[in-house]
Amino acid sequence: MIRLKLFLVSLIAMASTLSYAQEQPGKAVLDNIHARKSVRTYTDEDVTPQQVETILRAAMAAPSGMNMQPWRFVVVREQATKEKLAGGFNKMIAKAPVVIIVCGKTTGAMGKENRNWTADCAAATENLLLAVEAMGLGAVWTACYPYDERMNTTIEALGLPDNVKPYCIVPVGHPGGKEKPKDKWKPENIHFEKW
Image 1 (cartoon, rainbow, N blue to C red):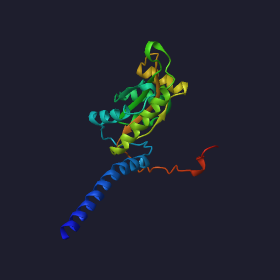
Image 2 (cartoon, one colour):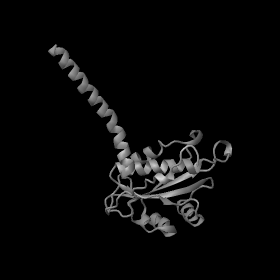
Image 3 (cartoon, rainbow, N blue to C red):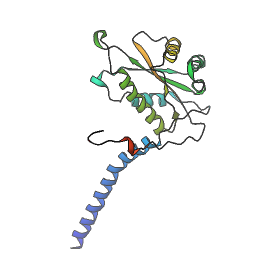
Image 4 (spheres, rainbow, N blue to C red):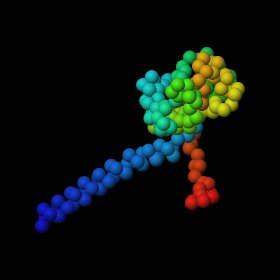
């Protein structure tokens, strides 16, 4: 009887450990989503090539309409190029150690228009930002598309081909301030069944 009780207790312990292990990864993901914040100031500490690759791998894991994966990324470290990009709309771009420009290929197979490129690039950008947050780095989504002046400055600075449009610019670095995430939960923005 004692052995049976010990066996049952160990089964319960194993089940609760397994349940805890299953809950924790999901909790970590949700915690990361809610911790994400816009970081606009950075220290002088560098972002390594390995960190950039990790960030871009996460970005490319995003969903994509018809799996076209139109996203293209330009990684900029050169100060002169960062200055050109910053001149288009925001000086913080020049102060980040690395800048990732999320671009979209606007044509698919046989030159056919890809109407999903902006949605796909948005999904990739969010994955990118969540990876940055998970790694203890900071970044901010700086809109490029659909603002002609910003897009033109970026196209010129990067020499983008005609069928590739800049979607957004994401400066990345080690946070230089104490930014906090915003609570954006608004139940009044939710409708059930109908408006």
